[in-house]
Image 1 (cartoon, helix red, strand yellow):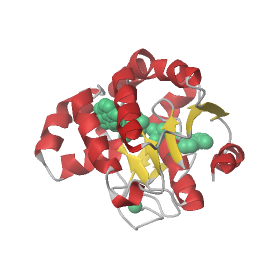
Image 2: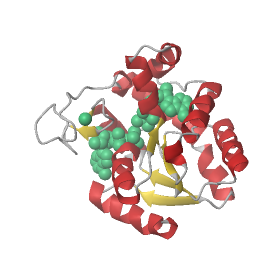
Image 3: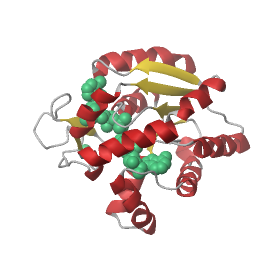
Image 4: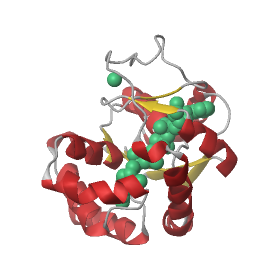
Amino acid sequence: MRLVLLGPPGAGKGTQAKRIADEYRVPHISTGDILRENLRAETPLGLEAKGFMDRGELVPDEVLVGIIRDRLGKPDCAGGFMLDGYPRTIPQATALGEILGEKGTPLDVVLNIDVPDEELVSRLSGRRMCECGASYHVQFNPPAVEGVCDACGGRLYQRDDDKEDAIRNRLQVYSDQTQPLIDFYSKESLLASVDGTGGIDEIFAAIKKILDAYK
Ligand code: ADP
Ligand code: ADP
Ligand code: ZN
């Protein structure tokens, strides 16, 4: 299965991606996680990306296309993959189409998780992350022990870009640059949408109904 998860910041892409990866045995490729790992390790890529990420802006397309080209070339992607946070612009989507076209392995489906703006702000402002990529919410999805990751025991932290100003900016960037992908992929007949409001398990059940067709 070759899958893209689409949706605004805070839609629950990362949360659902963990479950999808377990259920369908596909690698979960989160460009946000890759960039944050590079930030922590202070690689040249991380240093280049930092300013954009702190401001809630997009990192330039060439950088992301390079990351994705490399990652999709790894052996674990041969049997399929799930992209989370890529593509975010039309040029990124076009580049992805070219990369996959060269290999003769086009996308199967683009799953769009739909959540209204008011809900996104409260999800993002209460989000707590772990370095392992797991995400929690102080109220909606708390870990068993406060401040500690259920999956790996790591310490949870609040992302710098999950503060009010950067959140507003990210939602604006989403509607300007990423939302047009909904139309783009619906014209390619690849789009499937799920209602991303409601409980996490309930949403996962709706996602399974869609994805079972591509197993
Ligand atoms: P994304 O990867 O799309 O930015 P996340 O998966 O990190 O989103 O989720 C954003 C925040 O919302 C997190 O704090 C997460 O725990 C919480 N969350 C995820 N799904 C739901 C849901 N169905 N209802 C309420 N909160 C949710
Ligand atoms: P969210 O949880 O809001 O969906 P991510 O973790 O996917 O956020 O991304 C965090 C930040 O990393 C983005 O605000 C952006 O600066 C950068 N980023 C991640 N993926 C991309 C991408 N495909 N193109 C450009 N910038 C990206
Ligand atoms: Zn963890």
